[in-house]
Image 1 (cartoon, rainbow, N blue to C red):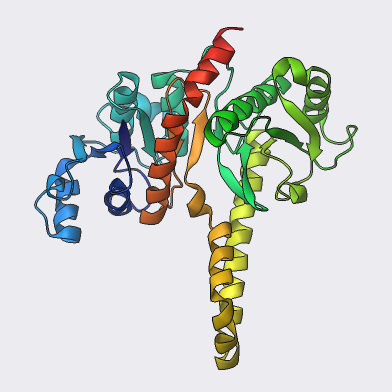
Image 2: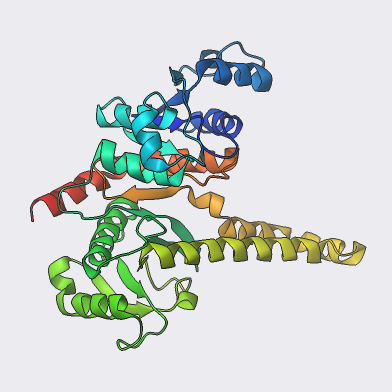
Length: 339
């Protein structure tokens, strides 16, 4: 298996990308192909590890040289069409042509979505691909879909999000009958806007036909109860929800750290609790859950956080390998293309 990794995408590229790849390669069965400017990558290898080139660190990491980079401020469609030798466009072309099994990038989100759709292509039968991150919940995690790819949706899109979530969770996590909830402002079927109410009615009446275990409306506060496996919503609402969760997690971690370090007494008192505190911190850390899957395209694509550090790249690489192993994309093709 080969993982294609955009070495030039993200706020901390290429430093964090390289360090994450070197850290992860020891635990992966896959090879990693770093896509980006070879001179810059090798200069960083010398700076970080004292080696002349990356092959001295591992024979499982290679470089695909490119000369351009899609910047965060670039207009997505223009960048994809005109920056042909950018690390992102080259990565997508390699993925499409079978030179890799999954593509990861922390670069320009709009360009990633545009490139995945235009260069790799949608699965036949899926109207709109969607971003699907995993988030922490009580004693487990849940999938949020969509987290920002589609700000305006129709009921058909939300139903397809639910179907894709079901297929992915079955094949990757072994959840036989994933519980799918619809994000709403109340659990009653009369609550919500027209999109949510119409989607609710369609899911309620046809969930068996769609192959979805629909458990009804879910309020934001109940998403973390451990009672739901995937939460479905439009990309605008989902992105606001995602950023709020990430912000709250940072607030909890920061306040907890400051409280424990307030004075000598609190610091000493915290020592017996350190194992529990570390477990809690690990559960709340979004880095542990890797990047966000881009479901609905013909090949596996993973969107890493734009601010990813080496640890998040490390977890995202491990996640990407499992994504490919699950065969979820092939299962989606089978399900949707037979209809």
